Image 1 (cartoon, rainbow, N blue to C red):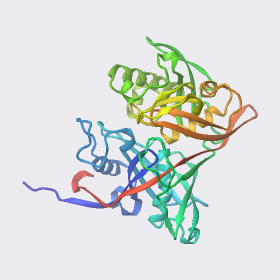
Image 2: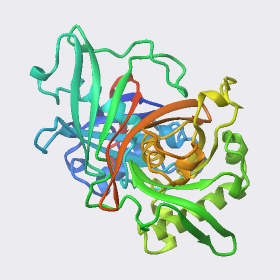
Image 3: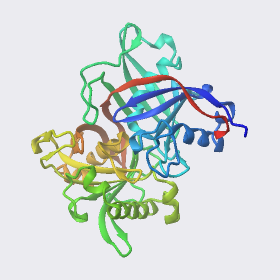
Length: 392
């Protein structure tokens, strides 16, 4: 029997925020994988180790969670006044598909440093010491993101004393600015309402804020759906019944937001929309054992990603949280106490996160100028990934 040899592809394994992913330079990919399509998807699936019926991704680079089953492809930007084009692929764990429908806010924190390492940023724009402003074009959602990457002695500084809940070790702080996460021509609230009655046949009707900022997100009130808002992963992820309930609600929300035209389409669109539930600030013990005091936060938020309660908070969902908090009357804003808010600190399963947003109402339509948060990033390994040559 003739066996297919393996091929090696230049790649870098990076932690960005509370996620990890395999990063590629577009020009390093096999030629037929440099364009979107089946070959590229199959390559990424094999790199990550999907589909895996065991749900472990043992035979690949994935970590068997939504936070660690991620891929990134970068290229010199084709957009004026931008340095790098950033394309994100969320790889399903037990299914053979890559979801290209949204961004990963956490890995965004690593895009700037990888772009600098890869020579995608003009050397004249990189200071010897200070901060390099990397202008990112997010291709999935066609938005601008600005990353402020610290530079020491002409190189990216990755170590530092910035602590991010959900990440064990401190690192250098990377402020990330999501510029105009909702274009003025787009509907921030696809239904036209700040709060909707979301009807789920045979289940019930629930108040919901459905917003498209950072990433399409459905927010529910924790108490209305039988939760406290202080739950940790095991409180939900160990129950197939609870997970199926959230997926059912998510699918109906996607339909109402106009993201799909048939409920069946939600199965192939796991990355978006996200579904989350909010509650007023209350004390709880985070997954690390750290006590989060009520006085330290404005509200609690729990969010699901790829069918599971997230261990911390997705960066793009944090943008949605900050934006919704800045708009009076949304469920997020009301959970945080209501009124005008330019920033909130929210509790999540791993701890807390602060996110700010600048929003204004123009001619009856809400517009967000930008949303800002700080993350960190660190290269974990660089070299090559190997996959069988017939994988793609």
